[in-house]
Length: 103
Image 1: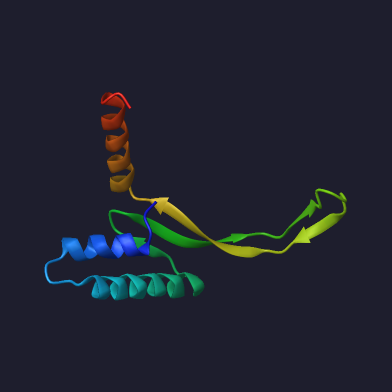
Image 2: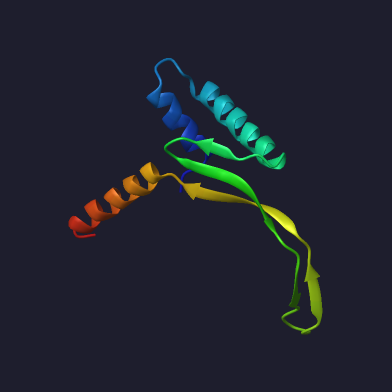
């Protein structure tokens, strides 16, 4: 699993002169900006990676699993991710390479 700390360390290693602390701050700023944009209903497009957009999940009625009483699930907004073609191709290449190596 990759978390924020690992991503920040990777960013710092990839950019000359960038400290881990600065990379963490940059990562936090990026995530805050993306969150704010999504909260305003905007789409965030990262070329070569993918597109994040807010998606409305409508209200629905379901049943409580134990009591079987009907309950109303309220509408909500959920982030939706669509990977870019370059990302999909990269993952597919990794998959075929791993499959060719026997595992």
